[in-house]
Length: 483
Image (tube, rainbow, N blue to C red; front, side, top):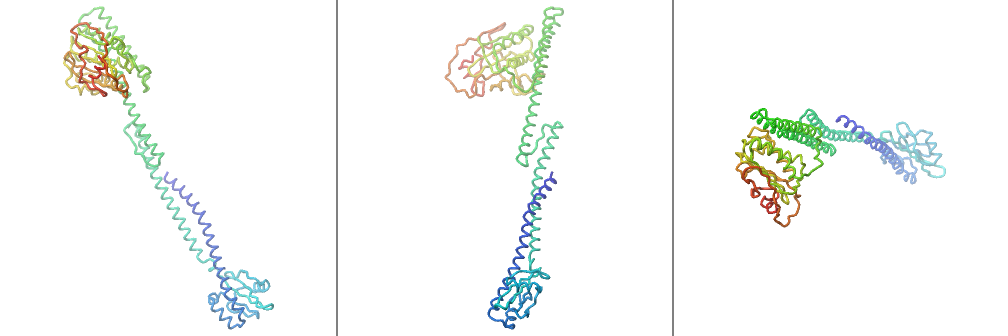
């Protein structure tokens, strides 16, 4: 590219230089010729006054010698008597023509041109003044001017080529960097970036490439995380299957256990089919349905987990509103969060450990609280790191719940429940962030309670007032009617 740009610059600049140099050179030659001829006319005119005063050859010879052209031997005077003073250069035919025409003209002569100017002395007598201009005089300074013009043209071409080469170097360097980055990305290195440079269009291309690679890396990372999240949904039917198998081992030949195991295998097959369908249809877009009723989803999922709780003799408790609690997330994602949180209770607490599930609805947020009577979580901060688990699991459940809460502008917090164990609090924002604050009124909603065994643990008073949230506190939501 650098060579091509240099050749283009050379051709263009050469044409421009020639379009100026040739006319200037020709004009300079014409001016030199006219200058020499004008000087000859001036020299001849200086002798005319002398001819009008005297016709003495001696005085005329003295006057001729005092003129620079006469002193240089390029001027002559032809008297009416036929005598010639000085050094004549004009051919005889041109002299006769000058006597006949009685006007000045230039004629060719050997080695240059000669000016013949007749001077009429009287009706019978005519003198002719001759001034010779040699070829060197006619072209004086022309060669030097052509040399200067040629050097200027060469300098213009050189400067143009140098500037084109510098511009080509910028373009080529930026293009080479972009090409190397493209080759690295083609080889699988998504950390490759280019330094935008060169012309504006090439800089825009470099910036677009960096943005494209960043988006590509982000989409691939999101796809891997989505695959892990989808695979995590298999843990719910697997947990149910494991519980049923444990029951069958304790009660071999029990038809009820066998039916439950078959049902668990059916759920596992359905979950695998759903994951495959979701993975094949995953295109980076969010589901069309962006809201659901949290009360309906929680009750439906608790019907599944209550059967497992009965097998493991776990007391459980549910606190939920009587009416609906809409949240701005799809039902499948909320179901996955409920399954992940309850699955952690079943996997990380011993049989017979009680748990509770509370659903609190407020004007700005809806909270999902899952608490148990187990040993609790020693390091809540480590538990929230994706892929980190101290109990031998995948470490994805809490991260799935946290990212779902943050997608609505909410948050997740790990604390201690009223039962003495761990409590996971997932708060989903239901009101826009920019919504103006209104007067606070206490709601008179009553919570519907489902209980199977155990004390009334985890009632409405179990809502912790020190829980932080991006736009306020749990105390404010409690006053807004969250419980």
